[in-house]
Length: 168
Image (cartoon, rainbow, N blue to C red; front, side, top):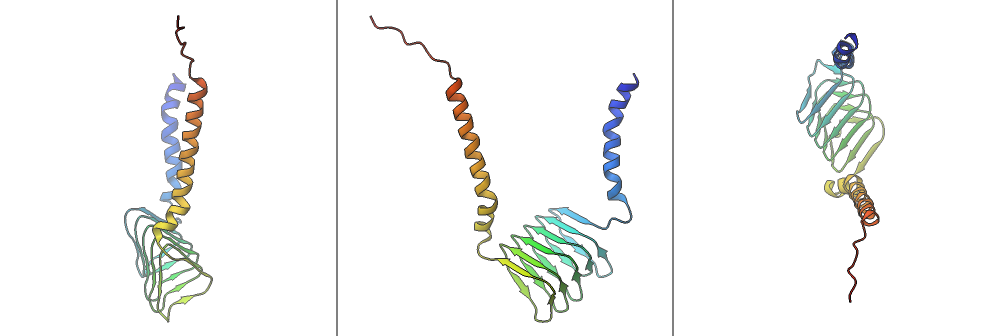
């Protein structure tokens, strides 16, 4: 009887244990899926990750900034102390903005002359669609072709032979 209640209680304890770091006061990370992120001038955030959304930075990011499928605007006197990586989106740096290393994959960098990039700048320009297909689509296509080949081979070698009636 005790083991039955423990089986019911164990998933709840795992969920609570996994959620505790997210509720801690020391954790100042932001992660969003499909909703834009805005860092206000009086805010300081450690890491920012955004999927299919845009990020507007007016304050300070002490860690890394990563955006998939969205744009980044770093406004006047805002800063990013870690790496800034943008996939399939643009980066805009206003006057007085400060960033460290910048990588833009399938987008453009719009940088004011008074913005500061203290590290490396890497851009993979061109059509974002082409780059995204080469990096993500082609491996998925090859994986699908491999799975189809394995299924075809298994069916071919496990098929039962059908007896042919003899002709008289």
